[in-house]
Length: 583
Image: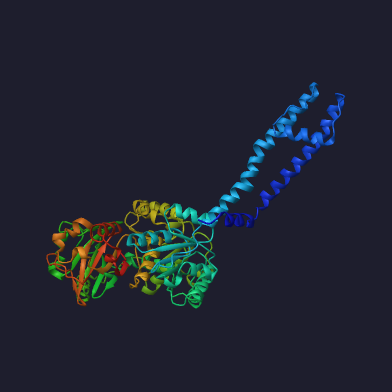
């Protein structure tokens, strides 16, 4: 706690805002004018009663009555004088009992309270803090990242410039430090030299560049990850000192485009750990539709193990009785040879589809368009307003202007022939609205949507989206991967793979004895022992010490895993690689 002298110094240093300063000035002027006027009227009414008092006495009487004290030593005897006294008294009630308390609160109490808050606001981190993460911005993206850090027990601090923001975030249970983001001393006070990572993630590239430059001047070694909102800013952010610059829009656009069904029924690699390929494969167009996994018999025929099945936002761990539907996506863990065998079995030379419709010419939409262009997939971009010059120049042959909610306009586009529609606008409300509308028009089309806020992911799935990619989850996982020094993969909401050291509670016991899958909902797809990777290890063999496992899991399953097997120390769940995978 800071002392009273420091609080007073801060309060005196604060300037009164322009509107409040004018109010205070008018309050004083009007009060003085009324006191002079009432003093003159006091003498006039006393003269009417044939009495005379000094000018000072007139001020004395006015002040006593205005302050509603009413000592009674000087009173009027006439009705006119008594009426005048009542008017002065009512004026005093308004000024002294209503306006004066406001003045005291606004110009005395509040400045002192704010000064006390500012004096007590945290401006430094303990010198003993190490391995922490520093964030220079807090929004939906950072909220998802902080949530993951807290689950792993990794210390962090959010640097804010305003004391009010610091107290607001602290009331939310978050760790904050107050300081000027453009001053090296702020980062020195936050022990930047001992930090594991600095995240610079605001929506403004010039601000991000400035912050990165200041942080790099403060510490030459600390890793800095920054976000680029415009492609042209990537080089500038790197020159300023960023260790890595992430273009979330580009990554999300490519991930959405890669999930489009036009790529056919072949299995596509989503992520890779050691010799393990985590792949997705659409069931539509294969002979697997309508069968159970037992009837499909992929394990015996191709030595392929199906980890789980996705169907419009719902993930189900695979079992013999799991039925494969028209909209099912098989998630499998395979070797290179098994992947080739699967694709040789189910690959088709037939036309995979009739193209893709992309809504929006933002960063995500344009990145998806570039990916589809490289793949040779026909596509149409629908834009309601005039696109940017860059978009218009790059995709002049593919952009059509119109309202996607207009049925007649849609009939003139590729929409009713397209196999997939990518909804990539910045507004989640619009995305939900269009998803509902498109699902009603085309029950058969594959809808892939972008969610800017991860709280809207479930809503988009309920509206009819087959896949939803959350900006917040994408950014948070990429930041976390960099923190853990894992390889960065393109992410999709709802499913990820993780490689970690086998927790001590699991060593020497088999997965069956631990009831691992039933308790957590996680699926172990591989185990690394002495540098050798074993895909789909036996659930009956004891787990060796000093080894690692690779799992596929959902966020809910991760919470259960940490609860049952990693609740002794955060170090037990030290992650080697994390990757949200494309499904």
